[in-house]
Amino acid sequence: MDIRNLEINDFWCRLSDRVFSIGLGILPKDIHCTLVFDNLLEDVNFHLTKNTANHNDKPQIKIVIINKEVLYQMAEDILPSFFTNILERFDMKSYREKHNDEVGFISTTEIENSDLEAVFKNAISEAFSDISKIKSAGKKLEIKGDINSKLENFVIKDELVDFIFNTAEAIEESYEKSLDGGILLTQEEATHIFRIDSEWYTFKNLSVFELLSLFVTRKTAYQIICRTINALEVLKEAKTYGDTEKYNYPIRIVLPDTDLDAFICPKCKLSGSEHDLHA
Image (cartoon, rainbow, N blue to C red; front, side, top):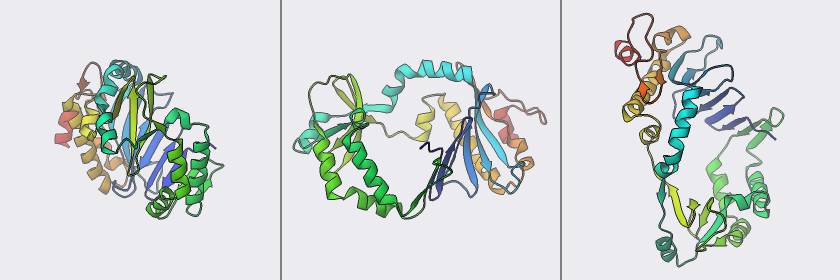
């Protein structure tokens, strides 16, 4: 089964060989965001679209574009420090003391193709069977209904809880693998955790602005967020692409910094950052 289309109530996402689209309940009605990575195009772009009756004349506003070669270079430059920027050290000693050393660890790599994976999949399938459907030859999963109650019933099943705790490993001082990730378990909670050599880490609680700032300058991160907010306001009232055309001059990310003036509006001759104010 190759799921390419997922719908969970007012959330949906679709993946193809050239685009990834996502719709969220927090977005205005009929508006979704899309990342385009078509092999036939030199650029990757992120844009917002409003669904209308005329599929050939949809309102759309591009937010950011980046040349693929620039993207690859950015990835190489950022990768060495990326994980130190999104992870923070986890005090395992204090955590174990807090929970009287009743702490277990389930490694993600150990779950794959294990008895736990099989039991977990069967339990999930059983819990959601009455509100989920597989469509389009196994490529679309649709879940419609009260997910919270299903999850609550799922996580409190005694036999599943017992099986999970019996599978968990004790926290050791040394490990064969230098890099691992998984779930830290106590009787009260489950925590996503990473281990690098003998040190433990969790994700930092980063805002959207802080996440963007890992890839571009803080000024550019702010511009991207403002452009997105402004685009959503325009799209709410738009009915055709013509209604959004004058706003459709995105930020182009270049190296080593972001050039907010990369696009010049052919109509008013203003740069991308100035055009927002002019429009």
